[in-house]
Amino acid sequence: MRKQLKLKEMSEEYEQEESEQTTYTNPEELRNLPHLEVYENHFILAGGNNIVARIWTEGRQNRKSQIRYQKVNQALKDGFFDQKIEEAKSPDLAQIIEAKLPEVQRKAIDQIIGSVTSEMGRALVDIFVLQLVVKVICPEQDVRLHKGNNNRSAFSWEEGISMRSIDKSYIGPSLRRHDLLRMNKDGAFMSRSFAENYPYTQFYKAEIRGAKQQGKQRWLQIIDDLENGKIDPNTTLLYVLRLLWKYSEALKSLVQKTLVSLETWIDGKEHLSIDNVAELIKRHIEKSETRARLLEVAIHSLLQASQELKVDIGGDLKPLMPMRTANLKHGNLGDVEVLSGSLPIEAWDAKYDQPYLSDALEELVEKIQSFDVTELRFGYILFPNKKAYSEVDRKIEDIDEQYGLKVQVLSFDEWVHERLARSQEVGVSEEVLAKAWLRAYTESLGQKRREQAPIDEPTFDWVASLLSILAQ
Image (tube, rainbow, N blue to C red):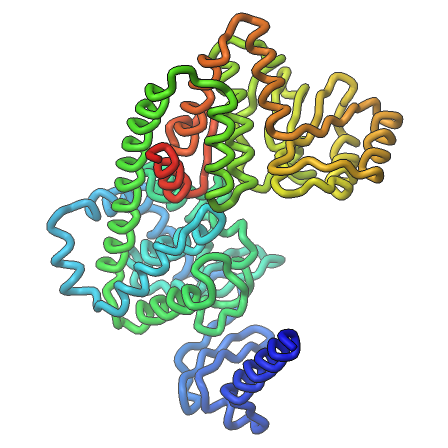
């Protein structure tokens, strides 16, 4: 009965959605709505009643665009963006923003900036900042056209500029240097969502991870407002940078508070065991978003602690990799690696809620084709559960027989206790290792260990949830 009611509800919702969506059969009716027309070498942006707003021509960058591109690059080379970041910190700016930037746009920007999480949203904000910077430096440049070059074999708009190169050379590095936003070194345009050969208009169809569909439309609407002269680009840029700066300062304050709480928590334990710390970290992982990533941080931070305490881990701990890079493309065997020179001699793949490893083992076989694995120790660290599967066991045996690689499958607790045993063998006590591990974990999340753990994703929510656990 419940299933029938559920099906009925779904059917009613679908019918309601269909009834709300207008279906047109006459092309002329559609042309009277705002739309984008795409031709072999032209794009036409039209408003209501088929009134043409803009015509963009595909082709090699023209001379005027080249001059605008050079103007933008020179201004950024001369420190324009860094100056704007400092200007955004001025206490007198709030009143100026309120007077010059309408509330509806401020709210839309608040939602775009506030949508950044550990997994998504950064690329959207990075490109938004980039567009604003270009518009302030060169108001005549249409920031909806993100591609422009003189390469005959590459897509380009005659009036476009290469936003990708500007982002990689100036915007991304400056945002990172000022702790405002951390993108990977290749910039936001590594995401295919922003690299489509269509102008950034309300009709840009690529799916964008970030502020969901509403956020995407808010961003595109603000860009339209910029191009139509409805809002001031300089005020908008300063407002965005001010929001990012306030977020950065809030994170630093939260991290400091968490580090103080951490020491109070440690001092409150008569004897701190490795299990105490492991249980706290496991609670934190389960309470947070992006749990697989936190498992990687937990594994890496224990090896950081071991290395700091002069425990021989067999080589040099490789800095923590960006999210989702332990794959064939990036040449990594595991999420966490110990190197001898440039070669991995120990590698661990963190697996959250994935006890069935058949697909992972097949991927491993592809990876080790280009590695000498005779001296390699490789394994999977599973959390929260470790289960046995006969098919997985057979594949592990086949890998050992064919490649001489003994794949280990350990629970998180098993791996932690193995590391404890190694430390005790060289005279490091359990309590000392436990304290060093928890400090390394907390400082890594708090962006305090950038050389060992260059975590690019925002960590505010991670640190906040850790603080709440420490305070209990």
